[in-house]
Image (cartoon, rainbow, N blue to C red):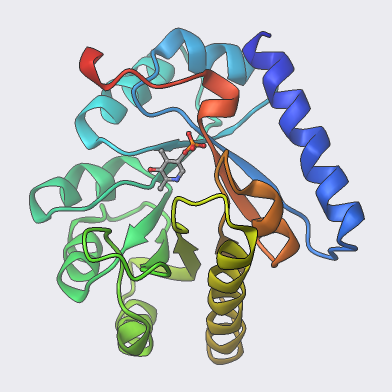
Length: 232
Ligand SMILES: *Cc1c(COP(=O)(O)O)cnc(C)c1O
């Protein structure tokens, strides 16, 4: 199957999930293109896809440069990877969104490094919903304080939450984690009117994520095929 066919099949399944679950929310598709070459992203672009997610700042900036030099400037770039302090500048300068903000220091650096004249950087807080020690993301008890910091920073716009579920086939566990994140999202949304984005669901768990209220799924493998990290 081509990338275009894969995108169409994902879009169809999103609609089927929504119908099955009588989900009121529209669900946007973020195509996760990390480790994938420019040509693959271009194919997705030519199929109409405009939202792309990247995890490695340096690799992403090279692709963003390439699209800009080709005059293709209507892509919305999402940074979804772990954020270290030394990576914040390129994210602040080049991206439209960051989904993986999980601490105050990173939020303040992104704010300080966002160039004047650009729109505020759309920012989601990454929450550790599966409580695995090694995974990035903030703990539930610290969300409100980070949300209030981000909401107070002029060059960031608090847009919502992102979570990665446990890597499991157990739908009950997945639903429990997703519903927990949905509950926190509803709470934050009441306090901050700019909050409208709940990003849950990847290739393996898109369906339960949509059933539980996701409105932004992040799909890589199913669109672009398996990733080969050795090529990086
Ligand atoms: C890589 C990645 C994805 C895409 O995962 P697939 O299983 O390939 O769909 C989604 N979200 C995040 C944060 C990622 O790093």
